[in-house]
Length: 638
Image 1 (cartoon, rainbow, N blue to C red):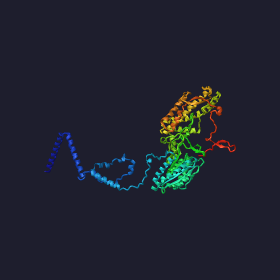
Image 2: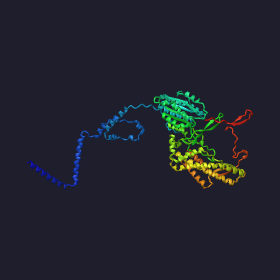
Image 3: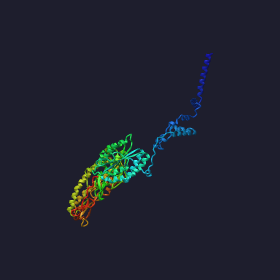
Image 4: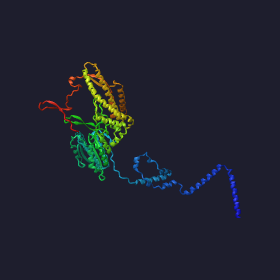
C-alpha cells in the first residue's frame, strides 16, 4: 500500500510538473516577472514588521529621546570669532533630523536647553571702560609702523591711549627714556608739561581698576643714567626729574644700549610672580649711534615682553643726514645736520646732484617714516614709532607711504631677498657707490669778456665734466644688469626706486655728454654776444638736444623711466624727485648776460662779504670801540 501510494504520488507529481512546464510556455514573460516581484515585496514587508515591532511607529522620535542635551555645550568664543555667516551656523545632522518631530516636542526640547544653558557659570569678566567718542571713530593701529600724530602733544595723547589700554589688562610699568642731547631740551620740557595731564587721566582709571601704574625716568647720551633707581608712583617727582635732565654735549646717542640696560634691570616685572605690562617710551630726534645692536636688543625685548615706543623725528628720504634746529642765546636759529636715517635697511636712492637746479637739498625731503633702526625695534616689540616732528622740507602723506613701507623683518631676510633679484642688487650697489665716490656738478656760468677768458673757463669746466661723465657711465653700467629682472619686482617701493635710479643716472649722463660737447664747440668758435656790453655766458637747460642722436637716445630712455615713476607712484618721494628731473630738460642752450667783475672781484659775481646774523656776530672791539663781525661759535654736538 505504501509502495503504491509512493508510486502514485511520484507519477502525480511528474504529471503536474510536466503540466506546469507546458503551462509556463503559454504564459507571457512579463506576467512571470510581475509575480516574482510581488512575492519578494511581500517577503520584505514581513521582515520589517517582525523586526520593528508594532510599538515603534516613529524611529526619529526614539533617537531624539535618547539624546542628552546637557552634553552639548555652546562655545561663545567661537561664535565671536567666526561670526554669523560662518559654517558654525549650519545645521548638524541631528538638528536636521529633528525637523520632522512635531512642534510640541521641539518647544519642549528648546525650553530645557535654554534652562540648562542659563545654569552654566561663566568666568568673571572685568568691566571695560568705554573710550572717548573720538577714539571710536578713529582707526588705531599698533603694528610697529610710523604714525604721524601732530607734534609732541599728539604723540603724548597717543601714548596716553596706549597706557590706558595696558592698564585695563594689568599693572603697568612705563619707562620714559630721554635723549639728553641739547636739541631735545625743548621736547623734554614739553613732555614734562603734559605729564600732569597724562597721569591725571591715568589716576582715575587706576582708582577704578585697582591697576597701579609705575613710572621710571632714564636718560642717555654717551652713557645711560637711571634717574629713578627704582620705579616710582609720585608723578610730581617724575616731572622734576625730567626737567632736571642736563644736556649731554658729547654728540653720542647710545639709544639701543639704554634700552638693553632697562630690560636687564627691570625684567623682573615680567616674571610669573610680578606680571606687569612693560613699556619703554624713547624720546629722541636721531637714529641712535649704536644701531648695530638693533637685532640683539629687539630679540631681548621680544623675549621678555617689553614694548618699545618712540617719539621722534621723521627720517630724511634715502639719506642718513637730516637736520635739527639749534637756537642760539640771541634767538638766531640754525639747522644742524644729524644722523636721522635712512628709513630702510640700506640706502636705496642714488646720491646725485641736481645739475642746473638751485635750492634743492634732498636731505630736506621727508620719507614720511621713522628711521629704520628705531622703527624696526618698535615693530619687533609691538610698539609704534610716533612722528612728533616731520622734515622742514618736502613732506608726504604717512597713510600713502604705508603702501611703500620698508622690509621690517630681521635684516638677514632683507639681504636674502635682495640676492634673488638682479634689479635690487644693482640698485643697492649703485646707491652705495654714489656715497663712496661722490660726484659734483660743474659750473654753468662762464666769464667771457674776452675770447681767451671763455676758452680758459671752458677748458677748466671740461676737465671736471670728464670726471663726472666717467663716474656716471660707471653708475649706469652698474644699473643695467638689473633691467632683466625689473619686471619681476612686485613691491611698489622697489619698482619706484629702480626706475628713479635708472632715470636719474641716464639723465645725468645725457647732460654730462651734451655739456662737454657744448663747451668744445665754444672753445673752437667762441660765440658773439647779441647785446653789446654783455660779458657772461650761462649754459642753461633746454628742451632742444643740439648734440647728436646718441644723446637724444639716452634722453628718451631717461624720460621713459622717470615718467613711469611719476605715473605709477604719484604722491611719493620717488615721484617728486622724478618730476624735478623732468622739469629741468636735458638739452643745453647758451644764454648771455652782464656781470660787473671789477666790483665783485669774483668771476661768478657773488659777494663774499660776511653777513651779520648768519655765520657772524656783531661785536664791539673793547680797544677801539668799533663794531666788527666775528665768527659765530659752532653749535654743540647734537
